[in-house]
Length: 179
Image (cartoon, rainbow, N blue to C red; front, side, top):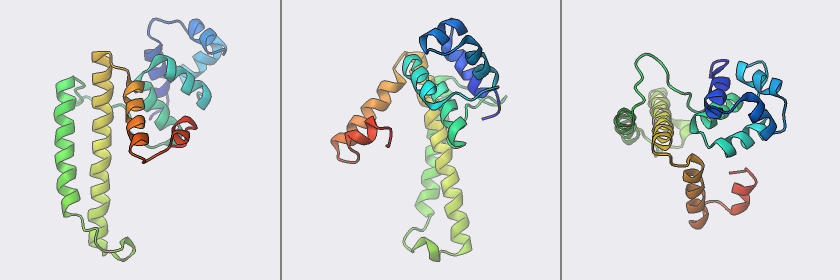
């Protein structure tokens, strides 16, 4: 995410709350909040977790994830983007269909260290298509949670609970942030 996007996401997440109010709530200085919002300082992981847990903002979570990992979706804001709920749904369905087509034709029967350069190109394009799906999913989640006032964090917690109940992860992984 370009410099300033995490700061803008933080500013949007605090809404009408002042920098001073946010700083008091998280026991940091108002100047520190300003530095986060202007990109002069990175938000430490503990502070970003604390703010996200209180603000429950999908866009901020997306910005923080990208800030620290340089992976994951970035908020789409180009002139061709339409973040209406129906547009994000249709775009997600389109991305899912494209990814399904690529995934179905992608050969996975051979050990990947022995694939041809042609098959490798197909595999890489399949992975790009899957990343497009991830971006579509994240935007759909953010738009719908925001508009319907559904907790983004609760959606993830329900997902984690399902993973735990099915034996895919254990509670310690989720509680300890190791999932």
